[in-house]
Length: 315
Image (cartoon, rainbow, N blue to C red; front, top):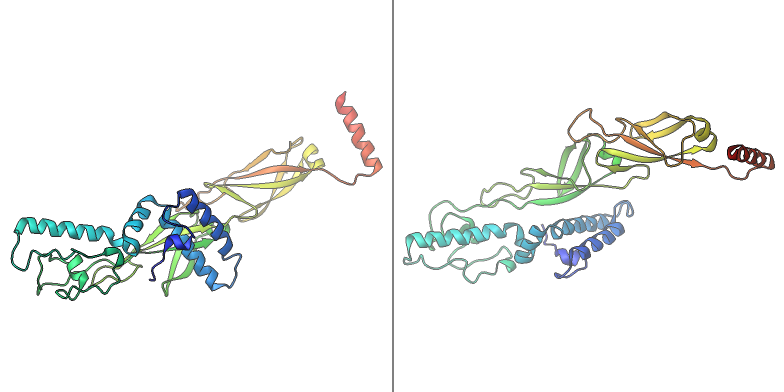
């Protein structure tokens, strides 16, 4: 997978604050969002890169490793462990002919491009992650290490996130089909074990981390497992009571309006909210806020009726 300069992707430098990163991410995410760039593969790719950069740089631990190790940040700790193991082995054995040269000495880990060769060792990773650290060649088993993890962002509508469904997407040229459980949250991350890069020298495959991005909905606002929406009620219904129609995620339902309902009052529809993640049959609630719509373009007769009502209410 090609190396991404995460700072460059967001148009920032290494001194950028967390607020700078968030602002840059929001601006670029809006610009390259797939909904605003349909059928534009370059915009889709850019959007994925922006999400990946944001994922790493907003995590203090990941950002620290990225700043220290660059493109090899995911294996930086393995490098340090290898150095420590080498130091321990040397302390236990003492220096011996052909075994005292540190294979890491002078190596610039940040600039490693996969073609490192000391002349003494034909495979750098055999020495870096293998079982021998004493120098010289060995007829033992070649070292191996785990494959790189992949990360991707999967966009969902609110309706898609509310339904258990299968979805296929592509990561690094590989088609992956997963079942997405109903109730996933915006920003939620899941791990698919063994779906990352192949390991080196027989090492295990890396994992794939998927972050869900749920688009804002025009009708509903989600807060946890509850949903919030607005409904319009005409003045006669608000004063005298009646019925109105409310949209839910599963369709339209009739709801009774009590007489003398005030503007801004909320109706709670139990169990009509968002499904609870991995708890089949368990749902949050739907809260519908009433907006009383006032009549316009009244006739003279209608105005007289309103005046009579107003006079009677003052008595």
